[in-house]
Length: 68
Image (cartoon, rainbow, N blue to C red; front, side):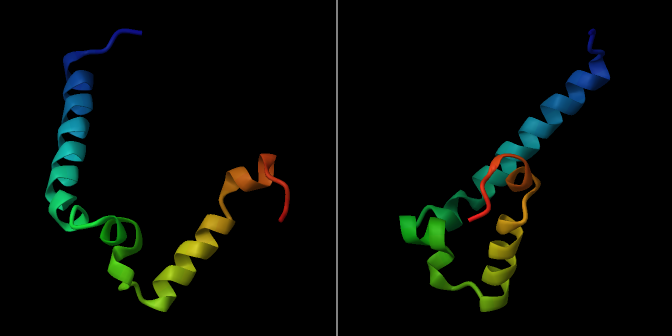
């Protein structure tokens, strides 16, 4: 498999964009561990429930996880 210059440009652009987003949000999440993991306990109930239900219905759960 040979990658051309445009392929490498896309890969580099992806990593630069990912690092940029990470550095941009570092200040918000870097205040404390509670702020990082729990969003400062300031998440609406509906967003937490959507997040929980999507976690419960991931495709890999159907393949190799017991149903509990």
